[in-house]
Length: 201
Image 1 (cartoon, rainbow, N blue to C red):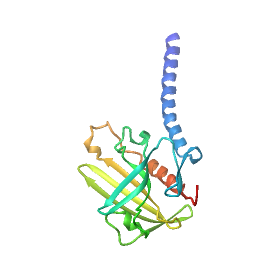
Image 2: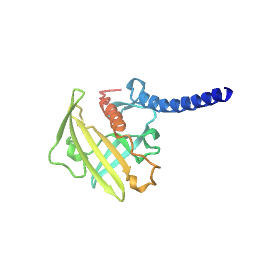
Image 3: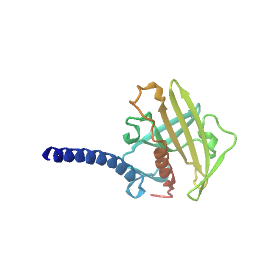
């Protein structure tokens, strides 16, 4: 009887630990998607504020060469390890808020290398966005970019999703899993929706 009781206790303890580990992952994800717990970043030079989960890393020196003679500047929020560890998502993936300082006009095409001839319109959260996207591949690396221009915000301010992944075929079987695309895009969307233009600080 003692052996059965001990075995039951050990089995229950292992199950409890496993469940606790699983719940901790869901707990982290739940915290990350609750904007009331997020930090606020405000840029005086670019006159905006944005909310973001505390485990993102801010790059205030962000600069992105879209094409020759076209460079965007602003800030980037780099994805946290919860999205990259054990997955094919690269740690240089980010969401940015940016502008091209020398351009007085505001056109979504200016923020893409292959300047599309037609904008796509998105209605989200009561706001209207012009949206453009492009993808690329180089030696097993895949790059996805999606840019959003909210039509009521001016001067020109664009949100960019930059997602860099590696082919799962480049890893040993079972060592790396596909990143959680739905969770990442959901979090990026929430950050984008929190963007606010500030008149003064």
